[in-house]
Length: 172
Image (cartoon, rainbow, N blue to C red; front, side):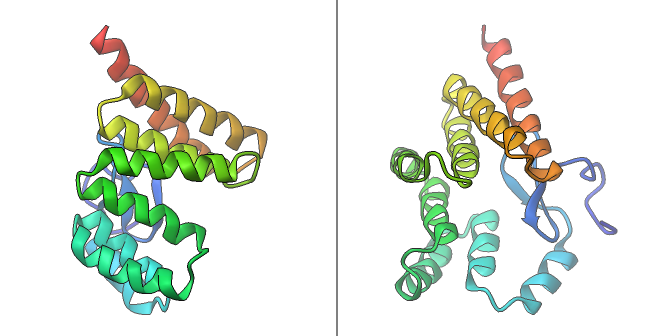
């Protein structure tokens, strides 16, 4: 993307214009403010605004929009994952992990299992549970490869798994 912060072009995509996954923190970051704002202005999906607020660390604002959106669409998978993400951003990691584990149990064996595992691993990694994160990322990668998922998703899982393994190796 033209206008990205220097050195971020090889960062995994985060699924929204102007946002990529930092390969060190494994968290999404805005790398192109203009592209992000333009996509947000063109979007009619409230979950896009929620996602950007989560990325920016605005948990209270994201939670408010999320409550309204979940009222309108209580079964939305994306909104349910964002509920756990809001908990993570709010430093309520244990509750976020519990919710991701609940989602994993619910979506095990479906095409969404890999995504839940990726979110779970990211949250475990952020909480310092690196060994558990390695396991979650490895399972997510295996599933994504087995499902012939989009190359960007496979790349994201590969980068996350390698980073978690590197951190785990340094700790030993």
